[in-house]
Length: 220
Image 1 (cartoon, one colour):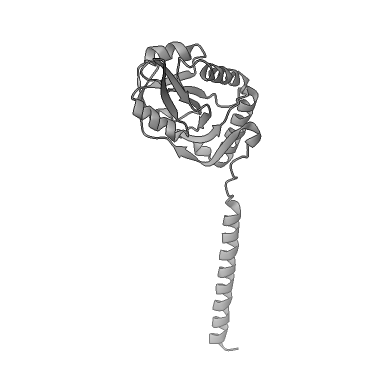
Image 2: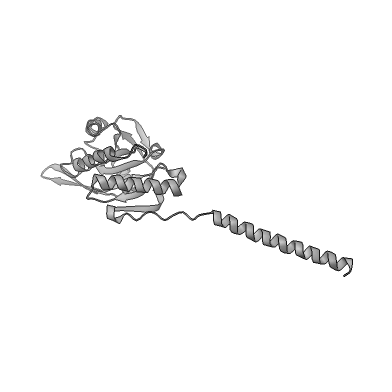
């Protein structure tokens, strides 16, 4: 075998080794990349979880202290959001009581969420009125009020609606009764339908958090 043929064979062998090495390296790299696990199925807990968080509408509203709150203000923590109003005779007091009970059931090693009442009756739900109402349930309960159209748009982005009715001169408000769970990116990650059982709410939150921590670390 002359020298040129030998050099050609050596070059071909090196090329084969290089290609083989690239294939092995690619397989190892792809094998290390795990596809995110799908959102947990929590139908037994009346909960639907989105694979990706859904952004809320832009808003500028007032909280119970009269401070301006925007969409960005909801980032950095988990939040249970609920559309209602302080004069609600039945749904809202029960919902808020269930959230307070849920809060007491959460394990200490879990993030401690906040609870947000989004007013469907801003004409009567002044910041002062909200403060008296949400303060009864705990320091981590808050409220939002302000422009009616802005509140409607925010409710819509939470899959919620509310409608005003005048009955014999008295304002009644029909509104959605579900909870929306917001992740620390300030996005809706789950919807929890009634009836609301505090034990189920606590379990749903823990399972959603553990899934988010494993698959979306930035939003957990």
